[in-house]
Image (cartoon, rainbow, N blue to C red; front, side, top):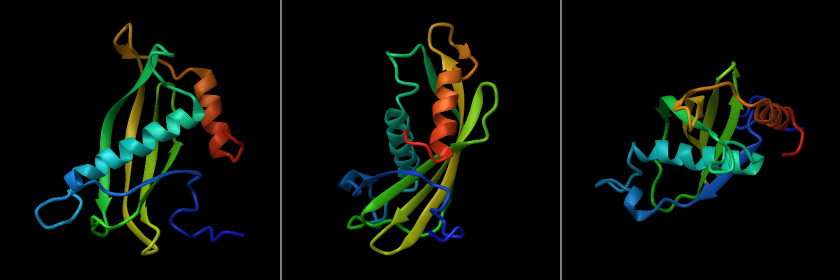
Length: 147
């Protein structure tokens, strides 16, 4: 049984990649702003895997209203990066994505973060209720059912 105290225990989805040269700052570290891009990579992968919030197939998309990142350890050009993603804290029109940036070769948590997302009606250009089908898919996935 996996350790429930492990920082990746709450996560069921991840994307993996290596930093690009353009991600690096003058000191050879991944620039702090790129972590939000890494969160985006994970978030988009999560949504694709669940088949939700995918324009133009849906008139409902997401708007990120808040982003937070906790930097714990530098990511360097040679690191393999895993971005683990989960969704929780659902309301009528909003919910939260949580992230863990993991360096598997180092067995190290490099960053954590979250983004608040609001369901956005593209045609009406305003917040709207999360479609029940989308909400059900996210909840089922987070509860351990296959995507």
